[in-house]
Image 1 (cartoon, one colour):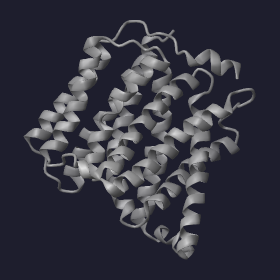
Image 2 (cartoon, one colour):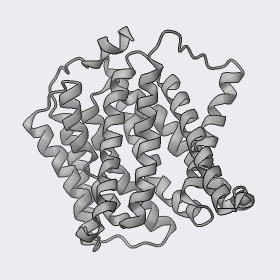
Image 3 (cartoon, rainbow, N blue to C red):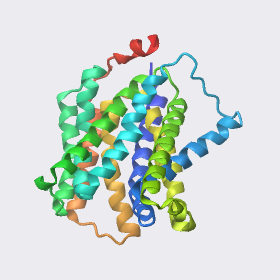
Length: 316
């Protein structure tokens, strides 16, 4: 049974996770100025996997996969990072970043639906309304910025919507697997799978284009190196550990809504470092997001149902 200190730490983890992700948009922009999207992902997960491999190799961190359902972790990695980032990369080729931001905001709603079906997580009417309020806050900001949805970008919009499904599926399955695996065990496997996948894809793409010599060219840029260190160390490794810890203590439907806080952080980072102007509608949208996050977690039921996956995973 969760005690109060662990719940507070879980909520703090969710907030810090959103802050780190919010700043990651800034570093992603800088990295993409110097490398292709898939190459950036390869370096991102190379850093994550390397940073975690060092303490494991030194024996400072102990992992135990004996008798555990590793095939389910492969499914987890297929949703995130593989599915999420691949769908996002190709979706943004045919749609705008504003459209991506709008569709990604619907992730908490998709998570709530999947969690109710697969984890039997019950949510109150006030929780549902609060989640919709948070989503509306993000959509309101993007719409007021002139970033509406163009129906002609149908394929791109569909791929971006699938990123919501992929991340929601990850949250739901991770919530279940964290009954069996430690957060560190899940992060190490998914990071390693992500690194190997994007490494192979990058090499194949460069080999086909005859540009293998350009694969390591971005490393000559200090800006790129620092951006990748942040993205791999903080935005991938640390956020994964924080998210998995939070999911091990709190329902997926409650945790997912915290992702919309990253929109507020990215707006703040843009104003601070990119001279992007924030207006009244940014403030209004941000207040709606915060109110939605607080409401989703304030008006929940006192006792959450047990995940239905747990018994199945234990038997595997």
